[in-house]
Image (cartoon, rainbow, N blue to C red; front, side):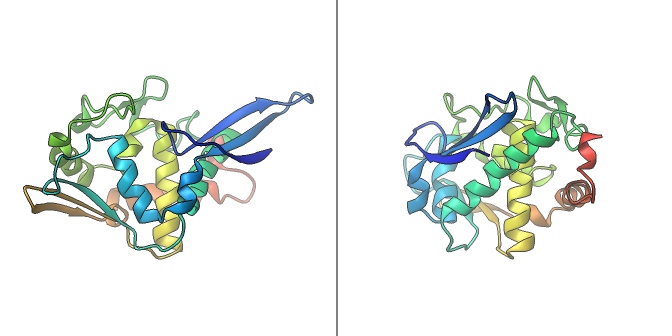
Length: 217
């Protein structure tokens, strides 16, 4: 990786850029929004979800996250974007070894789970907040750790690795709450989901192989 650059942006909190050097080798540049330096992980998650869903007009309906981590959101971003760099280096999702049973096609970004039919994570066209209960109810019974994971196979892998480290290594409690008309409808801890645990087991077995990730074989 060539370096980390802080650039204010309204579209995304972080992005990995690939450049080709004069030696014809590919290098990564990590670009981050400096606002993340001023937020905790919980504050960042609760703010960024409304880049996906329409922001509620009142406080009686919505979605909230709790990781109970005092660390800067920079930790979460470095984990997430660092996973993208690792992914590009070893072609994990490109070869679809981790995602093949979940993603219909990496290029078209279609999830096999029909419960998410019509769900597209697009920052230019937000999801109606009225769908939050149905979407998160489907998430509970799925292999995903977040709605943002539905954006693409690459984001799915990055979210999986990030929350694995926060919960299983740093021992934080990742919890999603959904409420409607001031009533809490759903509380979900994705890392306790048996389907997610199986994916974590597979991911660890491949990533921590002694020679190289088994995904790239």
